Image (cartoon, rainbow, N blue to C red):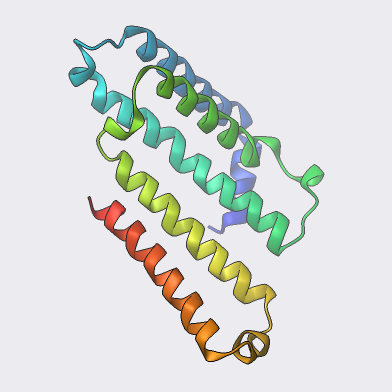
Length: 166
């Protein structure tokens, strides 16, 4: 199964995808109204599950949209709204809804998720730069500049890895 097959599967089963994200949003709204300082310890794993259940598809959808726009130069008007934009919208709405009541940094595993997002973003930026940049121009800029860019990238990846391993 290719990624395009997965996108086609989501597009063919739009009601299931919508039901999944609506269910997550309704559950997040319910938990947001139910949570308070006394029962946060009991509900923090459910909140963490909701964050992961909506963030992983949302992050993948963001990467998919960026890849389609920047690398393939696909027209956004020709893509499936369900496969490309509903996960992003649901992720933003759910995280905003949960963040109103609970600090997301306090949830188990949220630091790893943010570290994963940083690593994915840095890897995407590196791939984009390598695809769009002529290597000779980068090297002709001088060895000091190449070493500086390499050092900054390694520091960013190291910080993200530390966040991911917490």
